[in-house]
Length: 520
Image (cartoon, one colour):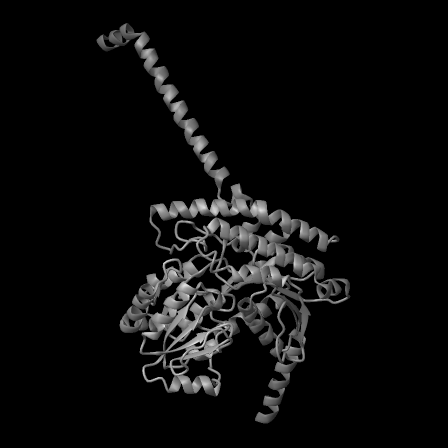
């Protein structure tokens, strides 16, 4: 009897999956491997769950599932390689210059995506999709895929939350304690920092309205000439949900609307994969432990100027720990007993090893998340984007120390390394935060898959969209209401003052009548 019931339940599960299986288009156009790692992790899991997935990106998944398809985005790699090669040289540019360069790159990505031959072929085909999952990185013209295929769209962020993501779903962003990602402020800002945060956000909005929005509008109209909704309408009403690569334990608490879901750490392996034998032996045989050094997928350490490179080598050579260093070419030859160098390293699995004592990082969000998950303190050398903000958070929470790249010397790096390695508070603090990150009702990947399926099950989940999307700036901030109240109060005050003046003038003109009344 039990076996019969078991078979019925099993068949019910398979039938449910078959009925719920959907055709999903994932669009992850940024030519950065770290961004694609996040996107492909989610898309691969959805494919393994039974959905038919099409991945549109510049990178291709090795050994994909049978129901996982690829549409190649042809990007102008010369343009992006030039940007990446100059990141170290341009580290001291002011935030406005960095934003302008980033906006140029984003417009280039959107243009390359929509003009790619395989993308054009897909748009001309009879393909239909039930859902689009789009990496939201100011590439708003790509919202047109949802309009073209007449399906809901889920946004994802490979970083934290910015104002131009909040606007897609109506999430509030109080500037009193939510800093701009390009400022190295935390949620504890003094008056001058709050002032700078407000002014910088206004400047950012102005730059976007001049440099990005018109270009994205034009790209949208050219790529989707038959669209019935404008891009402005899509910005306000097209996005059903946003999956945010963040978690309050990684940053700080802030308000979210119901259709903005934190899934920070969803890409981290819950069970470490076996390390390659050369790496495993190197770590296991390190008597004093290992320092792991990686500047991520975009920064090339070979492009660091010689003086700073020598300073880094001298500081690392003085450590009693051995060093695993992600290095991008064959130019560096070091003592193999002290250093292990490689172009690619399984970072997640290395950080999971208990003999790794410290992570030297650029402060990227993925690296910080993996470091916290595995309980490893950091020394950060932030260069661009959100890295300054991430390291400011690490210092405030006490699980890392930042070193300014502009002031990087053997002495400054050695001080930071010795501080973190020899002061137990950093290891203790990151272990505490790691427990908070891991203490979730669902694994972040399971949470992401649940909400993807939720949007599919409920036809775009219109019922969880905020009504803020139907309000303009004046209505959203109740400025018309406050103006009416102020006007009414002003009117009452004015009439009261006029009445007092009239009474006073009357009494002033007829003092004899007032004395006569008193005598009577």
